[in-house]
Length: 346
Image (cartoon, rainbow, N blue to C red; front, side, top):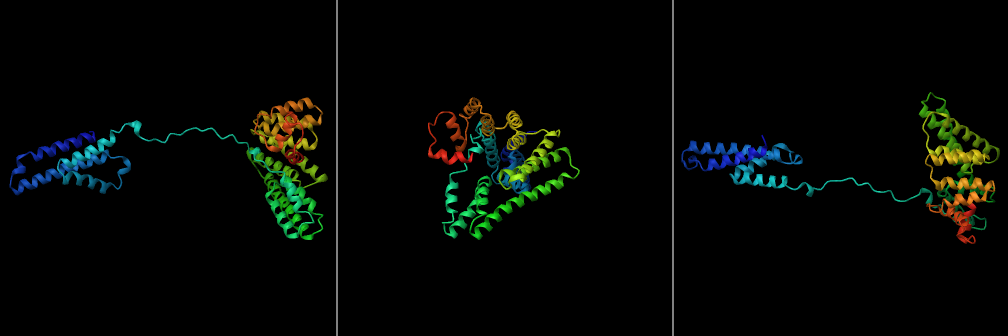
């Protein structure tokens, strides 16, 4: 039975009890009978209104039930009706007035990670503060700031400082390069040992991909030179080829890395095919097209370079790439000072 009907039945019973002749009787038995009957009606009204309360108000159960009973018992008829009116007023609120948390799909902001410009122009300022004419305190402070500079930029500067006349500068520069190289070499040893174990296909793919990235990082960060550099490139290429040969769905990142490695090894044909495949797999044009333009430029196919650069016009580019694109797009008659700061480091 609906609790609402129980509440109204209790109200009607309470009204009937108050209008009965027993209320006017002076007999003690009649008094206790009326009191007991009113208490029973109040219990019914309290339990019925308790059931109709929202679930979050059901605890603690006993105190809430006693509160409902007290309202109905202390004020005969009026207490039960008051409880009923308050609960019904809350239950009758239109559903459209209730506030619901409705998930809303928002478009992601237009942001390209590569547009976070690493200000290459700061190299000149760092180099000037590292010259031998600068006091040693300032040189050491400037040297330590290179820790916040990308390794692709900072490591060549540190290598130049290995032949510095000041011993402290040489030691700090060597220590920074050595620490970074040892960190990568330690990770390579760990992954190489892991590769010797019994691994699933997916685990083997992850290990090979990680080894390719680590070997490439040694080259990209300018931590190795000469024949060792070529050896690491060949190692990275071998790991990439082994990873791609596994029956594991691959993303664009590993194929793009393959293209960069092949380009460094001088295999422009293979690099071009890898870059195109990476774009088919979802690699952003902002990162792949400049390499394709570089390959075309090496072949002296300048019309194709211009066409590739034209595709970058509407994209969100880093300043260093935008400077080159402006030249090929004929939007810059001459290389301005800002371009000169970016072009040597592309």
